[in-house]
Amino acid sequence: MVFPWPAWTSPARAPHGTRPGPLHRALQLLQRLPSQCAVCHAWPAQRLCPACRQCGHAAAVARCTRCAAPVAPGIAQCGDCLKHPPPLDACLAAVGYGYPWADLLTQFKFGADPGWAAALGTLLRDLPGAAALLDGADALVPIPLSTQRLRQRGYNQALLLARQLDRAKVRPQWLERLHDTPAQSRLTRAQRLRNLRGAFATAGDAPVAGRSIVLIDDVMTTGATLYTAASVLRGAGARSVNAIVLARTD
Image (cartoon, rainbow, N blue to C red):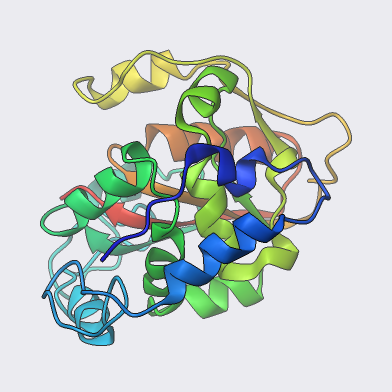
């Protein structure tokens, strides 16, 4: 059983620094009630039962430490990262972008269902290596949406995931999206990078210099978005930039 939130009850709709109202808190409570696991359909469970979360990590393939692309077991970095080191010091991905995770992410992003953030955030927190990156981070910076995309969706899924990891360290205002970009699903990595040129900037008063930052996003495909954001943060003086994503295309 799923209790979708109306878009206007999303945390993104509440003014900055204000507390959620009674209806919002009631809806949050409903999201914690037992329901049927969306993957194995066990009952009673949460949206993702503990067994399915563990299976998601156990089924994960070996991944490059710099870009999270699949590699052969025992290989630390892929050939592309060895030849052209990315602006990320490290990147972790919880699962591959396939069944059932692609379907769940579609519900989360496009189904007006921000209630998925809690279950998917647990999947991220349990990811091997995530605790070390989070503990060493000065700030968690979610990949921002454009104003147009945020208005359409009602919330930023990357921000909701970041809040599940360490709310006290989340700094959504440090990175801004200056303009919307065309749909990138069918573009090559080079085309995506051209698309994203000038798309991000740090806020003028963001204390990025000397900080260790972890970027948070839901899906990593070619890495163009994360690489562009990481380059902007490095240009502003960030000491290190890592990334944690929920799913990585294989």
